[in-house]
Image (tube, rainbow, N blue to C red; front, side):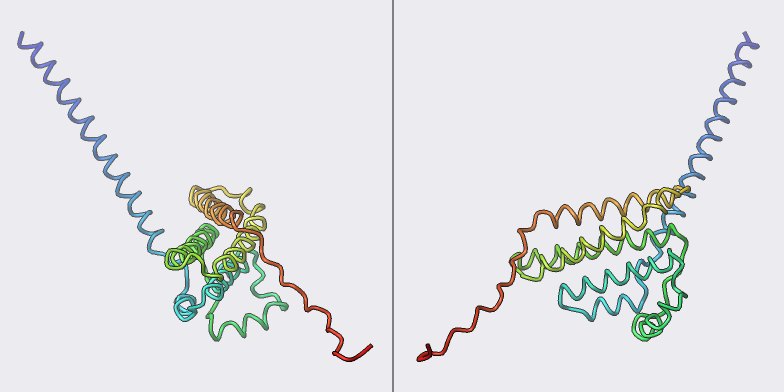
Length: 207
């Protein structure tokens, strides 16, 4: 009887140790995941100069232009064309107000673009909530949709080469944000074509 009790006690001890090990593994994994998530959240998707430009640009379609250029600046880095002679003059001019090109891993830069698109569409939504008939809304949305479509298309080769989870996740987020923008743009009515000037009427009294 005593032997059975000792055997049962040893089994309970082993189970307790196994449970403790499992708990430690779960806690460590949770800590690592939270640390990585915090690291991604700590990265600002716009540079300080870009943030200032967004704040200073109050007109909606012009502000969307700022977001688009911020995304394009990251495309320059991703395509490794930032130092090309063709871009050098423009980059030097831009650096006065835009600062240096943003830096980061491919996953980080893709994440930046995804969040830039998200902030841009949020800006349009905010204006729409205050004044849904604002004529700048369709203009800004069409600009943003064209940029989103272009950038997603340009990044397809890089997306096909994505290997780690961070890149895959950010590409997925970028695709989702771009799709939301395109769907919103597709719901817009056709743009109103500007009528050309009418032919000059003949002055009265002439044949």
